[in-house]
Length: 102
Image 1: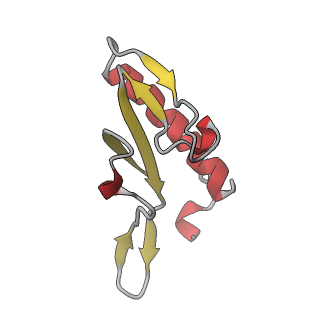
Image 2: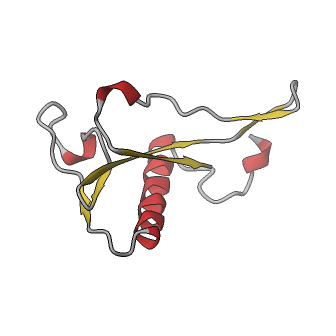
């Protein structure tokens, strides 16, 4: 945690930081695919709202999911670690997965 002292977004809640990283990833996705048509996720009847949709946005009809993880220094092992929990690869809920590391 010392590595994140005075770093932008370090003091944000996990949820808010995740949303900000997702917003940045969408901007980068737009820059990488300038000809793509971007749209917000549509409400999903199982989840009830676009915010809880199984993907984060649409690009030219492709369902894009973004997950982020925080890089953590493991002092005892002298190594960096990151984990992307909760990715549902086997359900076909998205077409493309963007992984963002913080």
